[in-house]
Image 1 (tube, one colour):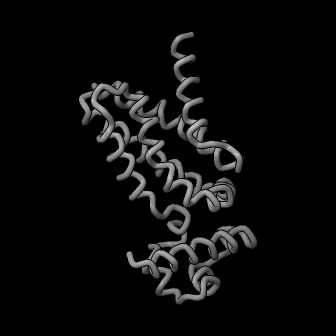
Image 2 (cartoon, one colour):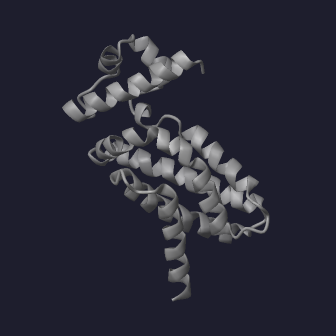
Image 3 (tube, helix red, strand yellow):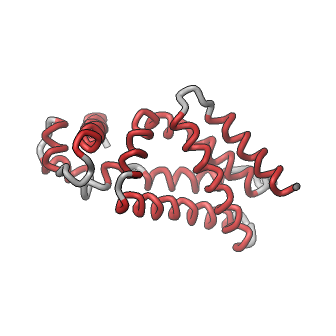
Length: 186
């Protein structure tokens, strides 16, 4: 996508967050988001299939990045450590979107349909992680369990990282892996 397309997409996302926070998700239309961003409604729909996707855009790329990072981890790496490495590899993209993460989370939390969509998107990340681990030769049931546990820990890391501007993403991941090891060894 050309730079100007990225700029328009970002402006649409920013406009949507402003309007959703001011008026509530349900009360805002795609046309209003477009007007707030200074573009046409048609331009909005070139970037997003519906107003929900303005909150979830970019996740296909994130899933692909997760799968790629899992595939590229050294062969001898344990499954949970592979996931931690993959999550670390995703940090630059997450950092780019960090200013929008907390407002986005608040909007999603206030709407049952958006919460359901968020859970479905999160489940698709978990599935990609499990499939990618299985492709590394990890038995399928172990790959699914590692993906479930790893994604649960990653969810907690993201929540803490989004709400604390001073939190260090890498340190939170390290702590999460340490906590998982402690749980297993107890």
